[in-house]
Length: 223
Image (cartoon, rainbow, N blue to C red; front, top):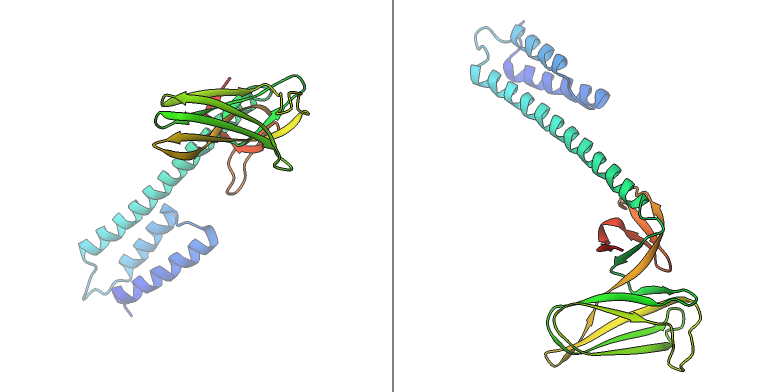
């Protein structure tokens, strides 16, 4: 008894689904075997149209091409990850600049960074506070500034004129632009202590002294 084209298509689809569950993909050999069986079992009174045959071949070619493309992208992404890991590993012990709000004051050291001014400002203020208590430690008035990158540095001397205790301090930047006070993101200079390989949603990260993990892609400068 001959099997109609529509019936065999359903059987072919079921075979495909079983193969996909078992192997997660349909290989070329399995596809050709299904196509051969389909041709042998077609209704002689209603043979398969050339367009149907070519359409199924085109679908297989498209799926196969997408699978090859996905594999190529996966290999490319793995290569990029490996290159990033090598670059990040070479940063351990070096200073970098990243968009964070904390800086580590070492004994006899300073806390420094920079801020990007989108337009000229009549005054720029850098506020340093205790990261744990929020108590004010130092305010730097940088005065009028043109647009662009503005570096700043705190030498560790607090409001009372004495050196602050070594530790982590929070840094906030405000600028007076167009008659309004605008909060801006500081880009702090920090030392890289270690590298963390990403997994899942998290990519490659670097551990910054006093700040913690920061995405490798967020680093703006290597000093």
